[in-house]
Length: 238
Ligand SMILES: Nc1ncnc2c1ncn2[C@@H]1O[C@H](COP(=O)(O)OP(=O)(O)O)[C@@H](O)[C@H]1O
Ligand SMILES: [Mg+2]
Image (tube, rainbow, N blue to C red):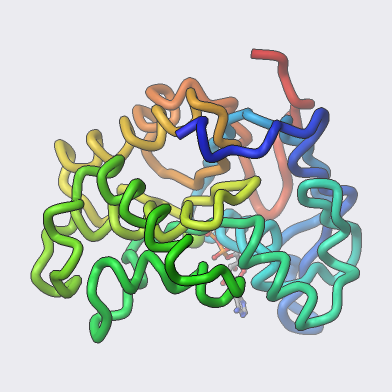
């Protein structure tokens, strides 16, 4: 998909500086002083036990939630400092997200699901349709463009979700347990697709319980335990 991509910006796609997140006063923080850098084009796997703060971290990276303290910089933009509408715009344009349970809209066709973020970003439908069709080809579901998600298998649904996440050519692709609801073989296919996208230059951060998935991604593993990053690495050259 390199033909659609803007020239890669040098430097880090993600920079977290001393980020903490507390959901309720008095509760232990879900994240505590997490600092992390991810280089443009890198693949990072966030791993750790249930409840350790992985989804919290991903949601902060996605701009779906805000830190209690610290700064979150994505593609050079301090997203923790953006107002609601600017944040929504930034998210639509620059961040793609894939969830464990796909989060597709059942009332829309496959194509319209994929087009939704383009619509939110104000991209003209004709332009977006071309991109969406190319992505559906790329992810192997072009023949089902007019189907509704309920008619698709889990693996097909996740492919639709990946196409949707990529429709605006985001600087960053985030995936929270993208294979967690899939059987092993299907999960491996989805993993291989993510691996290909990263090999083509897509910056990728995924949360997974599955060490094999992380290994197949050739991802740098960041372990998180009780809201803290163990041996937080710097971005590595690849
Ligand atoms: N919206 C929320 N409100 C209150 N507590 C939350 C919320 N989301 C997560 N938590 C708590 O924060 C901690 C980290 O959760 P989470 O980031 O979902 O972990 P993981 O994804 O690693 O399983 C857990 O103790 C969880 O109960
Ligand atoms: Mg989680």
